Length: 182
Length: 179
Ligand SMILES: [Zn+2]
Image (cartoon, rainbow over all chains, first blue to last red):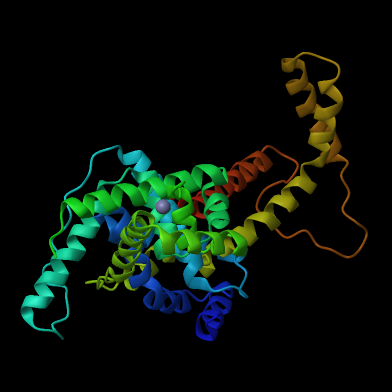
């Protein structure tokens, strides 16, 4: 599933065209931002980390295989940076930014508010997880990596990865059960 | 009846179980309400995570990122020319100074540093005094100084300064990029 436009842009970037990299950023930035936001919970911080992820990608683009899709790669780069950032930041849990103005109002306002509140509860529950559990959820559920891929990415034994992921789910389920705002 | 473990339920939903094992689980789930409800609970969580909406990015970051990349972009032409010039000058200087270097290397093996310095200067002056330019009809330009005298030292100092300046120009824009 290689996007031919991404592929073309990457080839141009390798020839030194920063303009093409700008286009690549434009296409992928929202997805990368969402990775960072889910892991960090602060808009400003997530924007900064998104920038860092693209700078890192720029520096390493020569090692990137153009016959593989770009988006999963840059999302993993972002996850890795956020994980490092989280371990440097320490155990404090940030307040979730208020995203009240975000949702589309295709449905009635009551439903929108309800759905919105639920997603805030889910985000808060994710952020309340210890970072290693949070990253396991991110990689499995949002980036759809297999157990083996996660183990390889985190450079940890498969058994640890599975135990983290399953515990993370258990904790999440409990948190969400105790806050059934829908 | 042995109930299904949490791990098995997780692997069931992650679709990582071997087909025989999955068939076994299906049988159990059809018969056991408790395990079926545990599975459902986990399934609800999967659905909730999947339904989490993507947020909009309020700012376009591409301009800011591109601005940061300017530091990493190819060096401006004058700096590249300066770097090229400095290498040519350095090679030329090295050729000119070879008698001095050679004398130095010989003395290094023999005597004390002060002797080396005095001796090397003497040797170099002797060596360069007898230095002959190749026989082709090459006219030394009127430099305004004698290349065998101490004025050569001044030229070398100048080259050294040029070298330092050019290298800092090469290094500074890169070091600013290191995260
Ligand atoms: Zn059972």
